[in-house]
Image (cartoon, rainbow, N blue to C red):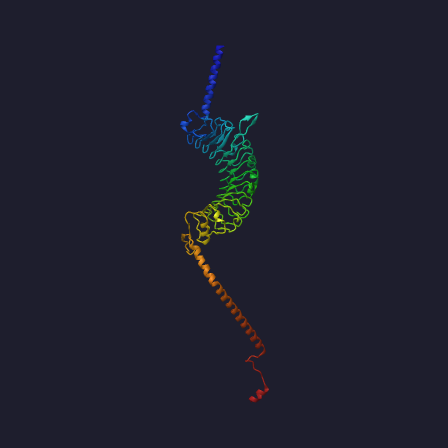
Length: 458
């Protein structure tokens, strides 16, 4: 009996040793992790920064059971193992870690994880599945997890598995920037239909030429959409699918060449539009922003071909607070374009505007510390001079002089015109009388034969 007990004890020791060895091979020893990484345990959140520590394995345990904010940027995990177990909330950054694959249910040991940043890795579409983003099994069913913010930017994802977000009911922010999406295909559309609570969606720097309505029609709570750095030559008409909720739209760095009254007409609640670096945009047409009465910030920077904004581009009821027109090809701004006194910020750096009275009144109505310089309209070389009230005084003098001479000049012109008409009429009357007399009287050169005159002459 004693021999059997000794054998049993030895067997348990061997099992414990094997388990310990396996754990050491699978996970990083976290006993002295704060000596290797930076830890901040003073606040209510435990902050752990293990950036660029040449880690190849995930930690075996968290140093605390407080809410955790952990950063592992710049390590070399290749395959991401399950997170250390905790029932506290977790925010984890795993960018630039050469991650190619994920363990199944990689987050089920930390089901209250809120933020996951997997940007700048090597994940492909096949690795991004619902089996990787699920919670623990309970009653033979996978449980949901608490991820609210998922960053998959700059991987190699061209399509989303249709049920990838099945166990992420709290997802509100999704970043797919810099992947290989040329079109949001049917599987991706079904995937997005499973996250109706999405409020922020980043599709920047893909190769999109349009945005299919079916891809966003279920995103009825979407507030912010980033479509910058794509191949859009127009603002997608499908945005009307999210028109009642969308407040921030970013379309920078696209080959958009036109903005008309229909461009933003279905976005009545838009608050901010960023349309910078649109190098093919030459003109903003009438009523382009007329229906956007809640628009407070408009950025049109670095639109180097933009040479005109229609005077009726905005509604008279516009509530715009910020307008950025830096580095455009505009030469004039009209004082009637906006209610300039409502602006809190106006920037025109690098824009070669002509000195006009309109421009003076615009800058007088907006908060600017220093008066800008502008191109002298009387100089063919467009030399820049400070913008002062002189541009208005010159026009005032010209207008006053014109008012003084306008009545006498008009009278003189009318008199001359009447005299010319009278002279023409008189000349025409004399010409007609001359023609009539000529027809009735023989020409002086006409020779008439008379027998009496002939006899007398002999």
